[in-house]
Each structure stands twice: as structure tokens, then as C-alpha cells.
Image 1 (cartoon, rainbow, N blue to C red):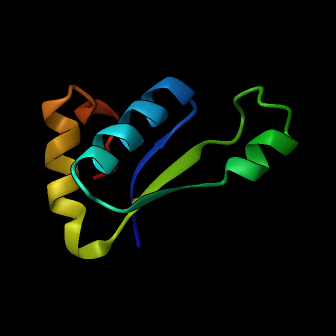
Image 2 (tube, one colour):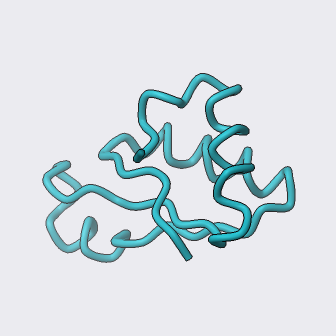
Amino acid sequence: MIEIMRTNNPVSLSYAESLLKDRGIHCMIADQGMSILEGSIGILQRRLLVEIDRADEARTVLREAGLGGELKT
């Protein structure tokens, strides 16, 4: 899996995850447990990971949804 997005914004992350799952792109959110341990004050960013062979497709989906500014290049 490869990281395509890193953010402190739980709304953007949830939206991105929903968009990808609707398209059948397997994804996972990493560092969610660490964020909970730090008290969810926003210091530690969560990462959105996708299968490496679908990363370009996932980036396209997220750009079209207006999340291009949060994508990792």
C-alpha cells in the first residue's frame, strides 16, 4: 500500500475514504490509533493508504471531489 493523503482533518479523511470505497478502491487509514492516544488534539496526522496499483485512480477520484490540495505528491 502507498500513502496518498495525510491530514489532521477527520472530515476530509472520512470523505476521501467513502469516495474510494464507493469506487471499489481498497483503502485504509493509518495512525488512527496514535491520534486517539494523543487525545485527538490534531498533532499527529492520519494517513490514507491505497493499493499501489490503484493509486493513480484514487488520486484522480479525490482530485475530482475537490481534495486535490490534500494529496501527497
